[in-house]
Image (cartoon, rainbow, N blue to C red; front, side, top):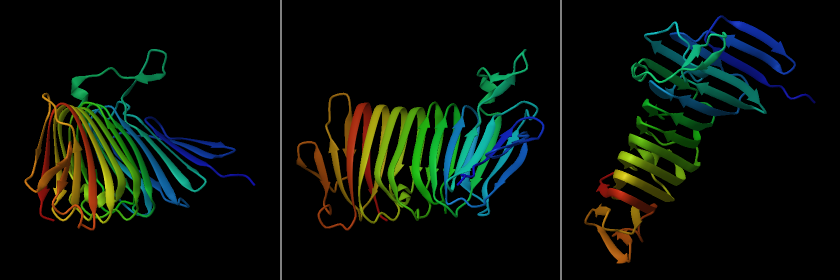
Length: 301
């Protein structure tokens, strides 16, 4: 039995359609405007998103569309990247590369050198279906990222950023479980809001140089593990008061931790909230800090 695989490639330039033994390869123009991919038989979706410059907005879109991409660019005559899509074994494979390209003297396309004006030159709005589970693998370079996860069914989430400013929001509970949620940032600013709604089991955050806020408010209904590593910078961890919390941290002369008053150090480097043994949901938080400042704040749910 032959396995069907449909592939779409959206690329700057004139539309071209190629038919192969595996299906169709579609090349579409990607200047300023809107492009869509209609949902067919997919049962899940893997999203790989790379953006070197500009601002990327990700949110829920038309449930009948795998994705809708709106592009706003002052310089719409130049290429801004590619979008490739295929279906394999019922899983949609969406690969979005928003890196800059230019045409070389030989007529081929090559990566564009960094122009500081490029950082704010483009805005990409990526809207995804809310009907099937989605696995994210995101890499951001220089620019901004805004992820509104309202209504999306997120099964995996991996985010890596360079010199970026990123906001990640879970305003409502995620209806599928994330086994491992991983975020790595470089020289950046990161704000995670409503992370308790993400429905993860294990959460890992690694920050280089910057300012970070990890707000775990939301509907946390189980025991979870959180690992936070910070190099040179400050991180604020927000934990709801109805969640039992244990913080593991070894303080040194180059780093400092600041905990709210309802934490008590019961063992060396282990701090427990007063409701840790009685709460129905718990967070076990491990913190490693280089030359940094760590704050753990409790807020009413």
